[in-house]
Image 1 (cartoon, rainbow, N blue to C red):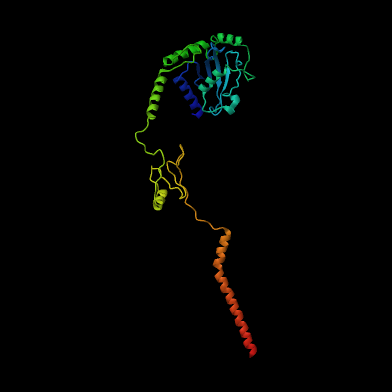
Image 2 (image 1 turned 90 degrees about the horizontal axis):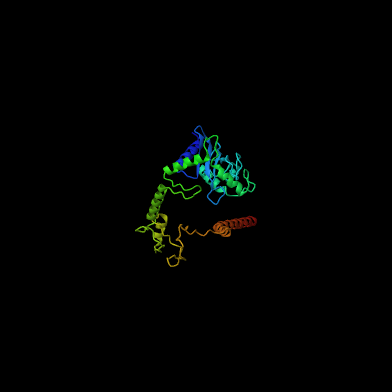
Length: 308
């Protein structure tokens, strides 16, 4: 099974396990999980769509959720054109804004909130009067889908009965106050666990402020080279500075890294040349003295030969 099909099966199961009374969505058939129909209640009053129930189609690409689905409304609403792909930030018209973490539930929530917005030249959008939209909303419940074979009112009514059986509180049409008793109990449990976790520990393993420790050079070198496991090492500052709790500013932290050991001064190139010259001077002096001795010996020898 492909990752796309596994994702769609997971989303279908999640929509049934955590139902919302405001919308219903499922694949048209078990043999094709890439073609869904949805039924959605209009936004709450004073929206002109408050009493409306709208039916539509979702077509998902084979690479879903890497690519976004496309949406179209089949019920006249006065907000979206009938049977034409609508342009939204969660639809195939804007793949650059789609995020694979989103899903069908996220898309339906977004569509329900987008209905109250203005079309403003949107692809698949309509800009009609509020009276026309209210008239479409009043007649939308009796609209029947040829594929599903039921009216919008029947589909959403059966789905709301399913929500009640699963402990979801269902209000009037367009009512946003939906509370699940199971979710409420889990929320209270989470709050209790969070309160217990936020209780201060009985013992402190790390001091709140760094403590200055006077140590000898041997102890400092040993501590810097091999600090004990689980204990924060205190490193001695340079001789010219000292760190104590009183000198640290409020909220400041102690040094968290080991200061590198002071480097030995490196001689500059001129100093290096002078040192090399000093090391070569004794050999040069000896060579000069040897040459002078040889010259004197040759001069004395010539003088002796000339006298003979």
